[in-house]
Amino acid sequence: MTKYMREHESYILDGMKLGDKLHELLEYHNHQIKWLQHERMVHLIVMICTSLLFMLSFVGMLIITNLLTLLLVVLLGILTSAYICHYYVLENTVQRWYKISNTLNNQIDMIGTNLYTSNK
Image 1: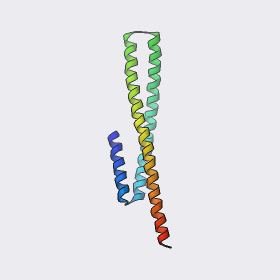
Image 2: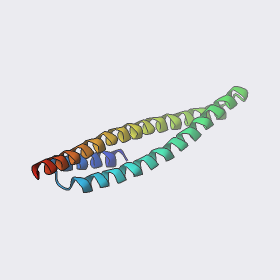
Image 3: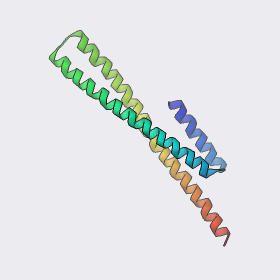
Image 4: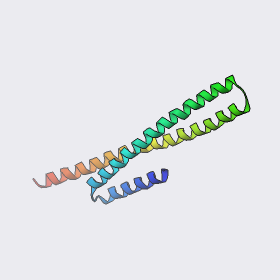
């Protein structure tokens, strides 16, 4: 997933440097943002569920102290930590992609303004 995000970002940034087909590039990039937003929402739901299970198992361990509940708490703690880290990456990537989208919009607007003023 992180490899895909890096590759997409490189593709978009390289396309912005070339300056060709910015409208198509923006449309493709915004579509990828929507896809990543969906992915982020799914991971948020899963992260909340694993966090709740972790907290419930922790309370269960306080009530029933044995090796099995301790193992469950440790495993769910590791899983929850992994989901939090992954969600952090997704959230930061979406925020970075928003900025790229805004930059693309600004480039398109500048080109449109330059075309408009040069035709006068």
